Image 1: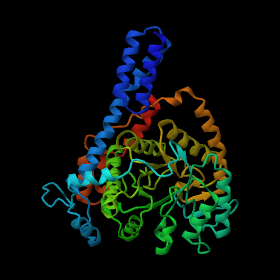
Image 2 (image 1 turned 90 degrees about the horizontal axis):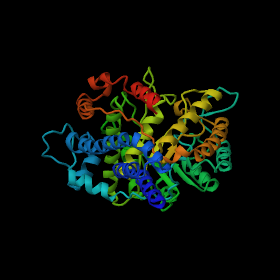
Image 3 (image 1 turned 90 degrees about the vertical axis):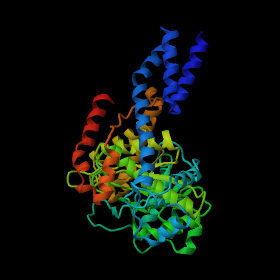
Image 4 (image 1 turned 60 degrees about the vertical axis):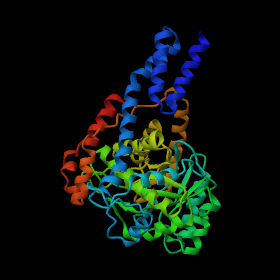
Length: 460
């Protein structure tokens, strides 16, 4: 009897760890019904208190995934003004010219699905779950005791590489940490990172010369961060760099840094739906040009503050990034990279370090894959500070140890993700008006993130 209930609880927890919550619920219910009074029944009863919320949350992510596909097939992406992209999709017979619902150019559903099927769910050089590190290429290096605003020199960049190497026990992805001046090229910076750090690394190969692209080809421990679409339209300056990276066959980190209410819808569900659609469009373009090229889902949703600027001090920032990670972990199975662990504060002080640690802990609690911008960033990604990087790493060691020793760390925590029945209508309205700032849907959702924070505080 004892062995039977233990085996049943193990199976239930394994199902939950695999995000098969409905199956886990049946097993937990069986344990509480047939093994009353056992310690296993106590555990099962605790899980039953939250399992329905996890089932509901997964259903929301399933809807977001489906609606994101509908954005691409029923609303479309505005590429009519970019002949290069038009020619690629026309030659592939990917556009549905018979659509009666589209605002822009819609994809054929079967073509969309065929391209997504080609995206490998295995990531080369995968650092595993909750892999935190640097990133974002802040434009300025924060120098202790100095107010000057400028990029890093070659010598300063080498010092950063040496510093990251010394803290590689907690840094699991070394994404290009800061912009550099003309004393070092992007290619030279990448080679410097390659020599000093043996884990997963990321750069932006847009600055590479054509013959320098071969450096990244075939390397499992490198990602090329690139982008193509924002606000359901292509960024003209990124079209050729994107195409070049795809054709080079390097590992692509497809980035979308849309901000709620500024460049995308204002509600959490509509925001993720549009971002997911835009990243999938990049996947379609990548698989059209180079079938099988590795693609990592880099949906990085942002939350703004009252003035409309990106706010990494917002408690909603880690929440929405955790939700983006769950969409991929629970539903699509795409390798996924998110953002967090930073702050809007510009000075290295106790509050800045604490805010960053709390952000990382929130993301660790709910579970992410790759987390960029987690160490050293300030001012909502405008600054990189070596001083703060070291303090962040010190805090991260403690947090990792605390989490590893926390029995609750093995369980899935509900995120209480808020539903928006008007998400698709909002995206369509924004597509028609061309700007989320003037959409009724945006105005109706100005408090949606604050309400979510209150729900988490009350229940989570």
